[in-house]
Each structure stands twice: as C-alpha cells, then as structure tokens.
Image 1 (cartoon, helix red, strand yellow):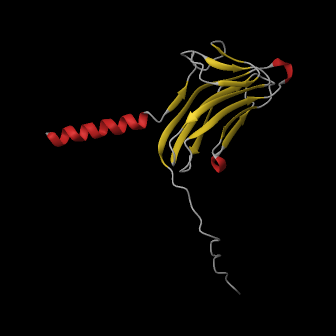
Image 2: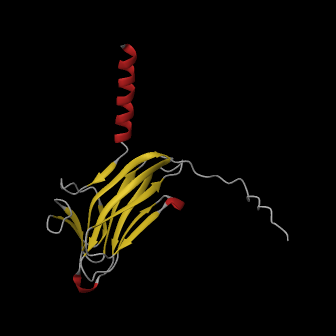
Image 3: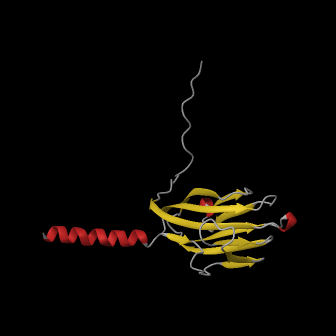
Length: 171
C-alpha cells in the first residue's frame, strides 16, 4: 500500500512539472502579457477565432517573452489570419540561434499553424514575435490561441570535426 502511495506522489510531481512548462495565450481573459514594439494592437471579439483575439493594425510588431526549459522540444500551435488583400503576417521565434523558426501567411481564413521548437542546453528564454507590415487598403491581421506545449527532451547533434567521406566506388 505504501508503494502505491509513493508512486502516486511521484506521478503527481511529474505531472505538475510537465504542465508548468506549457505556455498559452488565448486573449479571452484580457491579459496584457505582450509588448507592442511598433504600431497598434488590441484585443477584439469581432473577427476572433475563439471568443477574443489580438488584432494587429498595419505596421505593427508585437512580442511575447517566453520562459523555456533548456534542452527541450516544444510543439508550437498558433491560429492566424489576415483580411483579404493584406500583406504577409509573420510569426517568428528569436533568441534561439540555429533553432529560430518563422511562419508567414497572407490567408484571409483562420489557419492553424504547427511547428516544432527546440532549445539548446544553454537556452531558457526566447521571444515570440508577430510582424504585420504596412498593408495596402488599411487591412488588418489577427492572431489567436497560441500554445507552446512541452514535448520532451532535445539532444543536439554534436560534431567533433569533419565526418569521414564514404568510400567511393571506382569502376
């Protein structure tokens, strides 16, 4: 009986640790946990994917500071859309060096994007940024339901020099 109790306690601690590494931005609770670097962004119900979303005016750049676990893999999911005729909306993750990623869209319908995000052993933070350039016709862009879910450990491939070339076949 005592063994089951300790197993349950260990499972509980592991579950708490994994859930603490997940990040989500839904905009439904009106939290203002982002920084507008340039332009104008506002939470709106009109045009939202679910309940509320973040509307970006032309010429807007918005960033989110992420706290991540080193040597980890995450699954990034984001819903984005632009108005018909708008220029590209770019989502990028910076400060991860060779692990930086970006997604670009100009689709007028809500579109779900998923990417795998890796952190090296010395990386514990990154910056998630959305950039909507100066668009013709005063069109707007929206983002919603951003989730970054911990997916496990990440081990970088380390090279110790130039790999040996395979033997060539001489005919």
